[in-house]
Length: 84
Image (cartoon, rainbow, N blue to C red):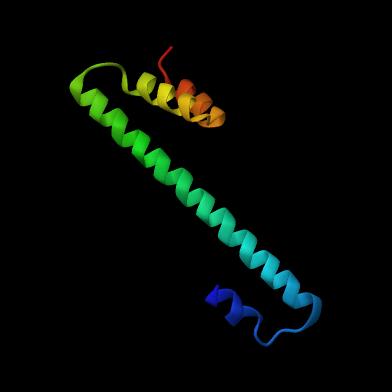
C-alpha cells in the first residue's frame, strides 16, 4: 500500500503502529461501503426497470431483492417506505 508507506515512513514507535492500524481499518471500511453502495445502486436500477415493465411495486421488488441478499437493516428500511 503506497499510501501507508508514505504515511509511516518518517514516524517511529507506537505512533507508527497506530497510524498503520487507522489507515488499514479506514481503507477496509471504505471498501466495504463502496461495495454496499454499489449493490444498493444495482438494486435501485433493478427496481426502476421492474417499475417500467409494471410487473410489481418498486418497493416490494426492492424489499425482496434486499431480503434475498441478507441485508436485514436495509430490508427494514425499505419496508418502512411502503405505503400502509
